[in-house]
Length: 484
Image (cartoon, rainbow, N blue to C red; front, top):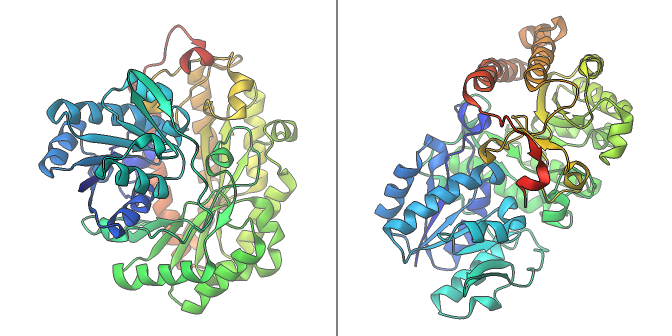
């Protein structure tokens, strides 16, 4: 049984503008168990080279797979591309089985299968165990209706099987790192890099995020086993940078500290980056030196908004005081802070953008990233805004970097100009310039230069896209009509 994993080319700014790529962790996670089960598995990473769908189809068919598995970390905006590739593959090879997975198809399995006859199965939830059971059933001609965690078409109807059990032991299945050997994955300034997870899930109920529903429960890998795996990646593949894909790796203070200590013991001189909650940084004040000693150079902090009322409404469970304190603590330990700020939670007026800028200046992060709220159907936030109008109907742009919802008090062109103005003020303010020119840590200076160079390209590209490329609907209609 020959199985081909396809990571489709993605239009997102993160995929195209950075000119660096990380391996598709989700596909590697299902690739490892399939290899260990005796199947022949290959990876076609079309996102790596921005391979167009017709070329993806040609290359895939040349490899003569029996099964094609597709998925992308940006699954909402990647779904239209996956649909196109699936249709092209089935047109050329009707007997080929196409299986897809990810967050978007997990929740939209019914619409996906009803609208795309070329897709045979949808994996709903964590894929490692489900894909093994499904492939075994296909190979042995057993009824797939007995496989938990899938959806498929049967007799003209779309059916879903029983929800699969959550994977309790995250070390049960091996990541297929060998699948990335045909690609030179880099990050952080052309350094060899991978993306990895210490944990899955998040215990916080933020209304705009669906991770707690997808992963169901926070779980972590064995700290020592993960440290051993990172050592293997460094010594076998020459990996220099580890990008953590966790929603919140430090949820369990004890387990996270054990991991930091195990990695420090390895003395690998790695660069680590990831996302973390600001309140956990404040919680760990007494052992933040371990973060730096382990190799952490930057954390992304989800600031989201300046208004405590909105933070409470979206159930962020944070505070502006802790956000500011976390940034200060990271700076004391020579770890960069990137503050993400989300536009669109409130009915913003011009003064709200001004207040947002003032708050960001007060926080004084090393880097900023402004995003747009995206009303995914599987989140509680969707029910709050489903009657609001949508202005972006091209699903390929539902990637947090494009405006989706209509704003009542400011025009879309005003929104993007305000956003771009905030970004440029934050990045060229004297404090920021002083840090990336004269920071005492040479590695951090290089990291800031790298990010600033990407930021400049993105800044101009987003403006160009907005005014000359992206088309927004001239007749806005309710979001609930878009996600029927």
